[in-house]
Image 1 (cartoon, rainbow, N blue to C red):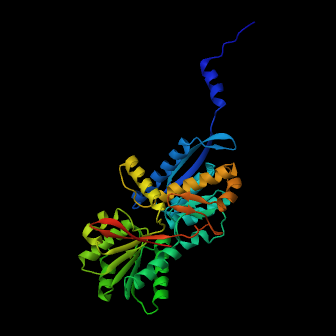
Image 2: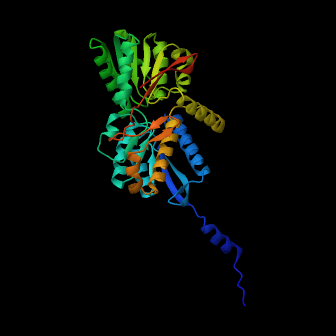
Image 3: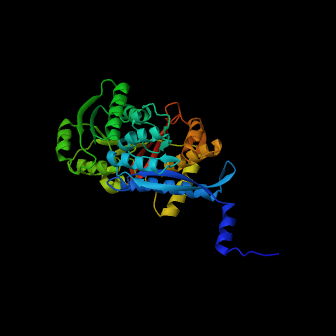
Length: 378
């Protein structure tokens, strides 16, 4: 009998092939450069935590072990860069996309993903148009601007007693959209409310003296800002410097742990009311608290805003793949449309348009420069 000796490297390759993992590639897009980079990095961290947790579970799909990997991309919060990144992910044949953060990048990118048949779950996009384009591949895990801006408008006049309101937006899809919905909500709740000023700036502006001088002359009791904290913070700082004593309100874009640093602690304390496009109560709060503690331990930093929603978006997509026994977009997309997943941010399921069902809001204010939860609005 003649024995053949197989080189060790080849033997190990054969042995490893039996347990080879199928790679499932998830694209993640957020602005990790530009003025909202701190929020984009928060999103990335949430995605990384989710993928690490999935891989630690040793998940099998259709009886085969799988490994989830992230393809991280930066859209800089710029629509053109966003569409270029979207095409890059399509060309890379990703199994799904988590992102984008900004409405202005999510909306044009969503057409590219739809044409390629790739599911997209945004953890942060609130502009109503995003899910009103007729794309069956488009989802979000947060409430839209109709809920967010409309509820803030009603709260401003109903609970805060605002009668003279100035509105500023940054002309982005998100900022303009949430400001418009805020005005609608305020007028519906109090038809006699006065919108004494409508001003706009840009998402890169730093000097607001001209518009604030105009606003000061109108003597509003509340200023609503549609935009992100990188602009809202300096705007609030300059309001205080000019002696504008009005209350300040904004949506999820300004409702961050970073706002006191950007505006100054004294400018936010007792002045700001803002809302996150999500929220949990009762027993579900423990899941959010546990996530925040894990995040703090892992990154030596606090959750800025969207990380829990990114985490849930990844987990929801993976759950749909498991239930469909396939990571192929065409096979798991119908399951995703009907999914019910209990995440750290609450129960996730989608309506026919891809909006989260029963989306809630959490109102916050700032005490001694610290973001403080007020109440959850269902």
